Each structure stands twice: as structure tokens, then as C-alpha cells.
Image (cartoon, rainbow, N blue to C red; front, top):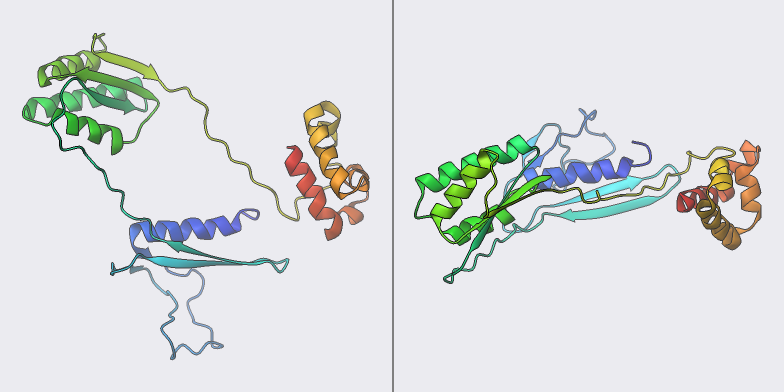
Length: 250
């Protein structure tokens, strides 16, 4: 967690905001004697407490005091509750009910559950049910969409889907779309002599990006990174641009 230590604090407080819980401060059983705790309203969280609701959103500050002298502070605010807006006007024509599951069997199980629901509630608003399925449920890899303009059509198609049979009203698919990607730049301390040298020699796209950074910083940077002088590379004036050049090229 060295390179992403600040994010751990952010995740902790996002979860605290979401669940309405003030988590205890770990490894700090005794408040510091250098703070006047009798004045103001600041308290050490020696134990977990509920975060009560009030007339304003919950807010939390997360501070980072880096070893290099970098100080950062971010204020997080509770996200507003999502508003699901449903058109109350009369909807005519076919309606779509989307279903999904982590596996084919999970998808069929969802179809069985919806069949039972439609059987028990024949008067249900088909359009509202479709909106709820689309907006309030998670969407997993295995998916199906049932289209009908009456409850009978939905029940017949859902039963067919639950049994693994085909239906003219049902479309089944598997989401194989690209997964989201994220990139993280390493911080000072991850440098080592020769880092990226083999990539530079094998992949022209890596070499072009690395050279572009060197053109701005100084051609000597390439010699420092690919050389064997660890002491020189560990000096901050070389470490920072060296890591930047490597990460950009990656």
C-alpha cells in the first residue's frame, strides 16, 4: 500500500459516509497530551460510533502528510440519494424486462424468480417493473431481455428462459466488452538502475515515449536511468523525472 496509502484513507471515509459509521481510530487508545481536548468539539474516536443524520450532508476531511514534505487535504461530502424517475403517464406498446446473472444458471434463476413474481401480481405495472429492473439492479455478464405488451407474454417467455428454451420475445447474450482500465504512477522509492531498458530495446512505442520525455528534461536522463550508478539515480533531481519517464512510457 506504499504507493497508494492516501487512497486507503479516502476509501475508508467514503465507506464511513456511505454506511453512517464513524470508525474507531486504530492504535491510538490514549489521546495526545499535547492537545487541549477540553476546548472545542474535537474528539478522538476511541471506539466505533454511529454517524447520525442531520439537516446537512455528512462531510469528512482526509489529510496526507508525505515523508517528502508533500501535504494534501481533501474534503469528502456524502453523495445525494439517487432519484429514480418513472414516467407516470400511460405507456402503450411493448415493454422490455432486462435480466442478468453471473452465470447462465443465475440468469435462469432470475427468470424463475420473475415468473413467480408475475404470477403472484398479475396487476403489476409492466412499464414500472421494466424501469426498476433496468435502473435499480446490477447488470452482470450473462444477460437477457424479454419484450412483451402483456403479463401473459412475459410469463410464457420467462418460463422458457428459465427452462433454457428459445422464445421469439427473448434475446439472450453475454457481455464480453472491454474491462475498464486504470493506471497508477509509482512514487519515489520504486526506482532502480536499468529499469525499462529491455522494454526500450524491444518496443519502439515505449522508446518513443521515453525519448519524448528525455527531450524535455534532458538527454542525460536516459543515461542515468539505464546506467549502473544507483547513487546518482537515487538523488531526487533524477529520481522524479526518471520515474515519470518510465511510467509515461509504460
